[in-house]
Amino acid sequence: MDLSTPTIRSVWPAELLLGEGPLWHAASERFFFVDIHGKALHAWTPASDARQSWPMPERICWLVPRADGDGFMAGMQSGFVRLWLEPALRIEAIGSPHADEPLVRLNDAKADCHGRIWAGSMHNDDASQQRGRLTRLSPEGTMQVVESGIYIANGPAIAHDGSWMLHTDSFLETVYRYDLSPQGELSGKTVWNTFGGEQGSPDGMTLDRDGNVWVAFWGGACIRQFTPAGTLLRTIALPAPQITSMVFGGPNLDQLLVTSARVGLDDATLERYPLAGSIFVLEPGVQGVLPCTFG
Picture 1 (cartoon, one colour):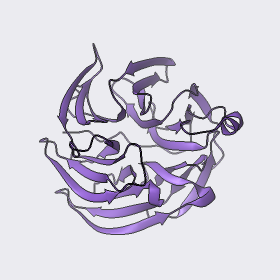
Picture 2 (cartoon, one colour):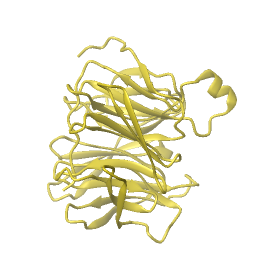
Picture 3 (tube, one colour):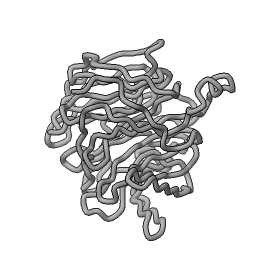
Picture 4 (cartoon, helix red, strand yellow):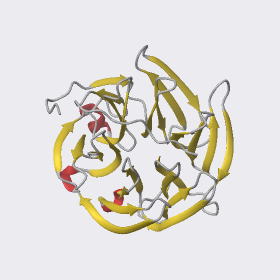
C-alpha cells in the first residue's frame, strides 16, 4: 500500500449544493454522482473529461446499476425508481418505504452481492427528527423496513462476500456494524466507531479491494481509511469542509472520486474553501472493486 500523500484534483466546478451518491459505471467508463438539493444527476468521463448533466423533477440521492444492464435503480425524494438516461430520460416509480411522509426522503444506498439494495432515509428539513429508516429492496421488488428511528441514515458499506454491513447515523456521529445472512437478515448490531468534534461526522463509505473501510467526514474536510475492525490507517485532507462520499473507479479501479457539498456554508467559509461543492479525484495507492448490481 502506498501511504504517500496523493495528488488531489478538482474535476468538477464548485457548484454542487449537496454532491453525493458517486458510482463508477464500467460499461460506459463514467463516474456518476448527484446533487441532491440541486435536483440533478451528473456524469464525468475521466478518459476524455466529457461532462453530462440531467436535471431531475425532484431530489435524486443515488444510483445503483442493474444486473441486466438496462438502466439503473435510483433513490428519489418520492422513493425507489427505475431510471433510464439514454436515449432519453425516463423514470418509472417502484415504491416508497415512507409514502405517507412526503418530507422523508431516501438518502444513501448500496447493493449487496445477492442483488439486494439497502437504502437509508432521513427527514429532508429537520435532521433532529428520528424519521429515517433502513429499507431492504429485494431483486423481486419487495420492500422491507429493517430498522426505524434513525436520524440521518448514511453510507452503507457491505463486505464483498456479503457477510457484514456498516451503516451510519450521521446525527449520532456513529457507525454501526451488523452481521448479514445470505437471506438478507441483519443481526448482532454493535458500535463500530464513534466520531465527532474536529473529526467531523461520518457520511458516505466505501470499501477497497482489501476490505478496508473508507469514510467521508462532513465537517472534517477529509476522508479516512480504517481496517475492517475500525482501526485508523490514514487520513487524507481535502480542500472542502463537507466531504460526503467516495467511490473507486477508472479502468484499473485505482482512482478515488470524492464528492462534497457547499450547502449551508457562510461567505467566510466559502472564501476559505472556494472548492467546496467540487468533485475531487485522487489515487490513494489501493484499488477498489466494481459495485454490486441490483437484481
